[in-house]
Length: 295
Picture (tube, rainbow, N blue to C red):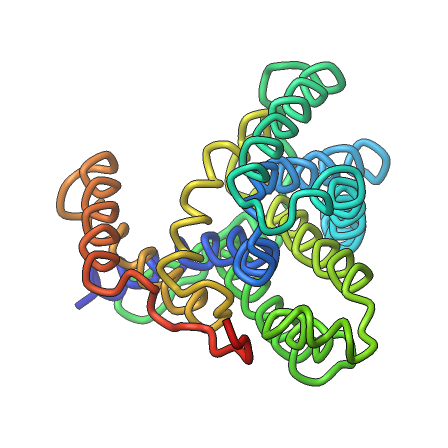
């Protein structure tokens, strides 16, 4: 039972990381149909924002708290700039957005090398997040994993409230359901697109801050994460936030179980086979988007 609970928490913590990474992509890809391969570099931007702030603010706890909103704004601004310069000319052409944003991701990686160097850098975690919490039965829980889990839950709640309650959220949902009808109803779809890109990219920046608690930062850190994020969004269902949440935690538990029974490489293969089998059975994903489209 101790091993089972320990592995379950490991899977949940892995799922929380996947969720943070995929949450912003659920907006830009799931709700806008843009295959943004530079999403991983927005994660990298958030991580390097934490690193830069720690050079200025030596207290690790304060620098981490300040890095969360700053990274959101920095990554969000990068997303808006990408949307204005390139993406807005490529809507309804997903393959073109894939190629263009892949090129942008390579440029951003080289820019990071030029500014910070090729070797990975490390940030300092606050003392509060460096230890473990002991639970009955000999189970230990890492504080940094608990923080990431709480951060992911807070991000989901905030995004859900924003989409369901705020005027901007209602406009976003209207544009997703029927862009042409929303436009003739007086909604500025261009402005909505940019705000959606800002929020989605900003969430990637927050994910980057969280990842600094788990390992070093490097120019290619986003490339190693973007595929997993796309898989979570696709399996959960295009444009379905609840599907993204469920699939992120399900894949995390599956990967943790596979790692315990076999090895990390075999666990990755097991997860990929499970995803392929699921999409063969349900290619539209776990949930489908209801629209008012007449097409």
